[in-house]
Length: 538
Ligand code: GLN
Image (cartoon, rainbow, N blue to C red; front, side, top):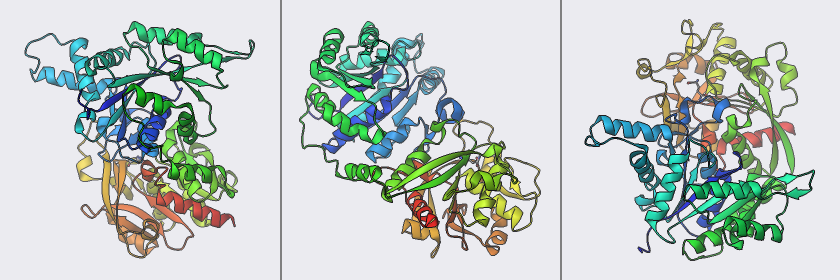
């Protein structure tokens, strides 16, 4: 065996979805990283969309964007927030992407007349992609999360690929962690192991033996119950790990440490424990998070507020920034569709700050514009992200410049005053998938601006996901009237940040700062925004 070989950990899920495979994967990765192993996590999703970029947020939650412009599953956000290492397109693969690539190869004649089949062509493509990051030489350990639940028709090719890879990689080079649910039956007053036993059996029918069981539970698992699970699921007693409900996901790495998940994994991979995990920064963050000195209320105004996952990264960024300020940030969701001039004051009263969320399409935008006006006129700290920034520009053009029908051409193509419009190169694009301005772009900050003060440097790089832009034809007029462009792309001249001088805190950004906020590096705008809210409250 090659001692420098990358080791692979596969994480599968059973019994039900939503058990938090992503959090378990990220927590284990955190512990391995904290022991000194270069670790990354990738997710293989069983749906046929090529990426989640075309999925409605109600269907699949937020679409997370990486530096290289990949539109990915929101679990990649957790990976980055936990590990503080950027992910990329290679970290997220869907069935759609796998098939697209195999079909393109077939069209190019690369299979030399062979019948193209799920096994071996699809499974080979999956295996190749599963090892892509491992072969880069950048990682000691690659954790692969398999989306879905074992037994699903959709995930079969992934399960078969894992089976083959485990066999090909050989002893001690890979392990399989299976996450299941141990439900508590209130009527019987008992925790039940049968669903886990069945789930492990289903996995076994596909030729995969789980090495470690992580059992999600609402109550402590007794020693007796762990013994039983070990015996019937064919794993060692020490490999039965309890994952008890936690008050915050950020607690899970410590819980896994107590359960010894990292040690069991390392042992099975034949890797040394190295040093005890260095979790100093992590635990400082946790301490601050759990001991807030004050609370602020922020209004999150958007149209996808029914589903918490739609704004996942924003909510997490508030948790990071809250801890940085030792402040509990109470996020109050406000539906922009039901907000208007008549009820704005009532709906937005008592807030210490207002964030207008990203979004697409015309539904709910008048409520967002009204919200901006309320925050601007009442000196309430304001933060607009992407569509939120565009709404701030429209509001200023309408109210202050008096351009009554100012709009974005996304909402009204015929508007007389397209203060937000499409770039030339976007005008001919008809495909929806992967064609927005995506990924990391440079931005120069204006000397003396709030943006420059917040970031403390002159040039930044932030991630984008939008089609429409600030229309520079209106820049002079808006700036003269007090709405300043304080961040501009040095190569294209596109305005990326706007701010108001005569306001305690008013900033709008065309990019998505929330994607870059991590436990180790809370995003500076979120940190300053929370600080402004604390000040506003006093
Ligand atoms: N719909 C807007 C655009 O495409 C804003 C996108 C967003 O908020 N992410 O430009």
